[in-house]
Length: 184
Image 1 (tube, helix red, strand yellow):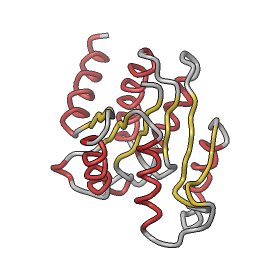
Image 2 (cartoon, helix red, strand yellow; image 1 turned 180 degrees about the vertical axis):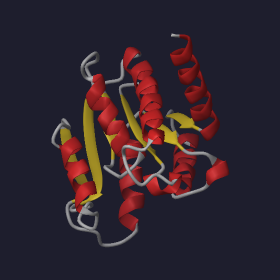
Image 3 (cartoon, one colour; image 1 turned 135 degrees about the vertical axis):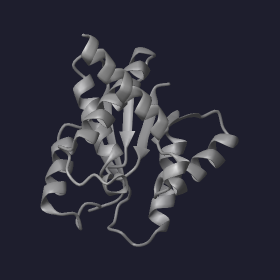
Image 4 (tube, rainbow, N blue to C red; image 1 turned 45 degrees about the vertical axis):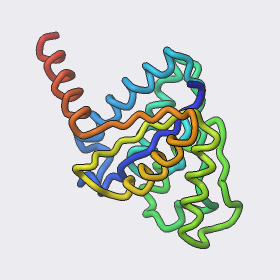
């Protein structure tokens, strides 16, 4: 797999309101482990749409992994000015990651005009990547459930890699990580 789209929960859907909360550290460590595995298997591009939470955390991780792997980061937003309604702190966070990305574009070259933009942007990303790493658990429904259904439908008609991280997966990773730290 040469390109993977990474998406999932927004921070508030996980009761995360600051990037320095301990939960964020573990999510980023787990994303790093998964992306590292992909990189060792030939991954070249990490694709995000620039949303807060899973996507920007994955962007940070991709940038960090460049030290050891030939990874590139692309941000493909649904529309122009997608951060315009975000607070200043979140806009700065996005800009920090965007400034280190290898490619930035928008599916629609205009500001927000309707919900269809999100659906079409998702379709565009699915058609132009080889797989998705989705952080989502059916037990904790939130906005990624709409993407998951689109992903399942798309995967049913194409040769597409679908990798879903559940809360159980994350919990096992955290327990293993903490056990290794205590033993080490």
